[in-house]
Structure formats: C-alpha cells, structure tokens
Image (cartoon, rainbow, N blue to C red; front, side):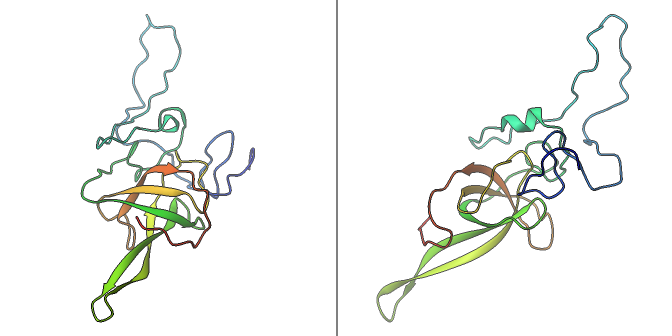
Length: 171
C-alpha cells in the first residue's frame, strides 16, 4: 500500500483513500462524463456530492476535501438521518467502517427502591470522514434505515474522550 495505513480503517491510505473493491468507485449522484467547455480552461473540477444532514450537525470538512466513496455515509451517500439521536462511548474499531459503541444507563429495581447500572453495545456505521477515532471517544449517532443485519445508526459527531474505556457514565 502507498503511504501510511490508518489503524481505524483497514485498507485506507494516508495519501489517497485506496479501496479493496475491484469495481470502479463513484458517487451515484455525480455525472462523470460531462463534456468540457472550450471557454473554461481551468482544468477538471472536483466533482463531489456532499449534503447537509440538518438537525444542527455540521458537515465535516473532510467530507468535502477527501476522495472516499461511501454510499452509507450520511454526508456523501444515500442515507437520511431520522428518528432517534443517541450518544455512546467508542469501544471497538475492528470492523471496516463500523464501530461498536457502549451506551450506559440506570435501571430502576422497584423491590429494592434502587437503581442498577446496565449497558448495551451497539454496532454503528462510521464514515471515513471521521479519521482520528479512538476507543474512549464520545460519539453522537443518528438513526437511519437498516444498513445491515445489526447496523441501524450512523455517526454524526465525534468528541474526543479522556476517560477510561469501561467506565460507567450516564448519558
């Protein structure tokens, strides 16, 4: 591979986003065969489809500048965010473009008039525009259509975390 590998995304290079797929990678909403006009001598423009997902979330700069192709990305792909907005802590980065987050909560036990700590792990799709994600970071995720058997949420924002990996914190 050319350049340095990203530990979070196997197969992605530092210089160019190198893909393991053997097919030609293109965005569905961009027409690549546009005829060049004779008057404009500026060369090729970077044709890229990027959208704002709304709900007060800013589109990352990397979505505009990078050359990755991800049809499940909420900023450059064919996925709409609707429904619930949740937060969680990043646990594992071992899958390609999918991470496991941990959501901690308190469950009330009526018999003892107390709360007990519980957690759920969720598989969440993460776009390549979020480059420096590490275990312990806090992510905000939004509900979308089912992307696979277990993935129904998409990462919208990453906040750097300072805490431990398994520490309990209420969201």
